[in-house]
Image (cartoon, rainbow, N blue to C red):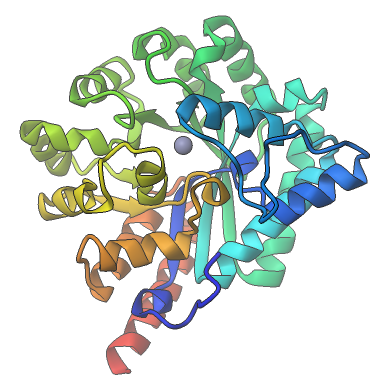
Length: 343
Ligand SMILES: [Zn+2]
């Protein structure tokens, strides 16, 4: 969360993000509060004295992420952390968020999926009323948990429909199994009326993005997708096909997907005409926020305020929501764009 919000031109732009893992958004003070309330000692090595999440590399990040997530015990915990996160996004101009939740994490906590869903839905309704932010849920399977669990999770997702649950995707280790191995889980999701995206091209290169799109034709967007930049023909194809990217620069920089912020793919993908959206992935882990991602796009990738308005329009057009919700959110963006033009 930006402590100097309002001092940067990017701050004035209304924002939308399609990629924020719910358990990865937990603000450290909220994590401490939950541990306290649940009578659990926060495991050594999760947070430092200054409330920073501690991790060293990607595998360690996954370990700390699971340790922190294990502090969640009750549906009320989910309610509190969801409402807290949505309030913080809205405070930086966020109008729309797609939160990623994984039934496997919920099962590991010994919680019923319906109880978790009810709590998150209630937080979404309260966040809309309190902060004016709209939210949808994208259900996630975890690749490295294996095929059997992916099918069980997909079945559970299909058995728990809700108007706010609109998306489905796979996350986790990109080298676990092949994209096509998850086709049966995706088929269940499509059958249940969900729209699909997939983590791809974050760790593995262009060939893996091609394989994902071929094996899983229902995938409409790329979770990350940034390593496409190493294959200009693929970038041109993705631009031509208008496949939206969920770009999370703060995450990529923190996890060294690119050697330096300046080498991040955002500028190149943008110049090639790709459909770019911005998101914060697991913001407190990467010392980022949606507002910081928009600033990065200006300060490091050289985009303009007008470009950032287009990025928000892209996210709303690519978001898994009904037409009426999309229309009213786009109207809010156009009202802000007009005010910006007249300023
Ligand atoms: Zn992610």
